[in-house]
Image 1 (cartoon, rainbow, N blue to C red):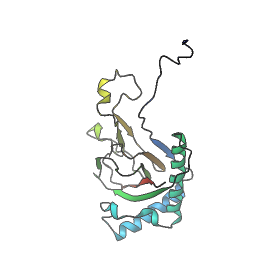
Image 2: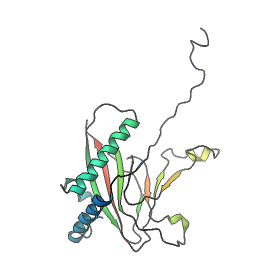
Image 3: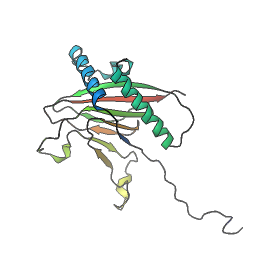
Image 4: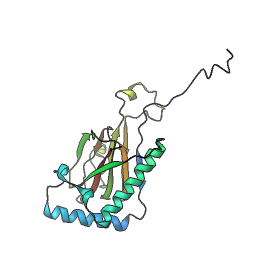
Length: 206
């Protein structure tokens, strides 16, 4: 057998990637104002609805702003699937809830079991405080953690994925989306202004 027919002697295969989608939604200002107003009405009726997020059915609303966001999420999911090489038709269900984070509110490291993709849309993001005693606080940020346990312990420091944590500071109008099993942490809001977000889980049905 010749060397040519034996195939390549060395192959480089990228395995187990984690894809984080970050998208600034076009024309977000007006529909986002509508989302903020809708959430304010919900808060006026149910002040503790953020803590009771599992009871929320955010995307069941027929409000134009909610329908706009659902359509933007569907477009983003379609682009994600295409990027992953999935061309066949899929259908999915979407569940969502809003969060109003006041001063000091945060979400401990967690993942979203039972769904395929998860994400957050940022409705209101207060400016970062001028001074923070602990720089690790990263107010207003969200951190994603390498799902490969201990992988960063054996790097030589030059690989693209050598860091165990990826930190994002979103702004209003930003949609983030990631595979649901990825562990993430929402840093505390250290502003007197509320941080308002809409999070979602997507489950593939077919």
